[in-house]
Length: 138
Image (cartoon, rainbow, N blue to C red; front, side, top):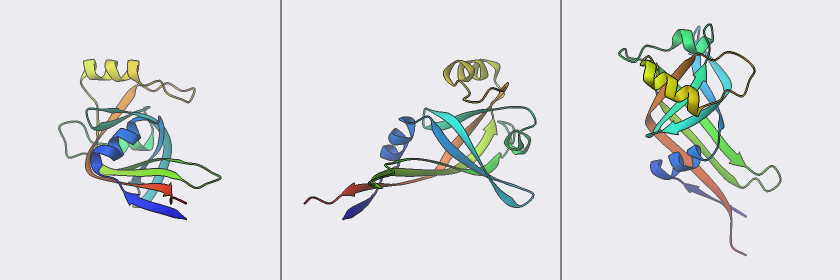
């Protein structure tokens, strides 16, 4: 039997910081778009790298604007036991425009695809939810 436990936001962000891949969800032409990306958690924010011409880059507001609402999801679920965790963060995404911050994120976050990734997007969480799936004690 599996037990499902809700995670508090700090525990969920800690787990999110322990993996490098997730999925960013945003809208384009009023339809949902999902992209697999790698990330770092920095001061409670999720940061991803992107490139010019990417749908998220062109739809993300600058750091001083309202930004765009996105969701970010990552998980670590065992394919055999179906035990593990899943975290979803909803918040506003902004392009990182400060040259020092951008250089710092370029050093921290190596893209996992062979493509020039000159941009970074910061997601500031407004809502953090997560679940932990564990085995019931026998």
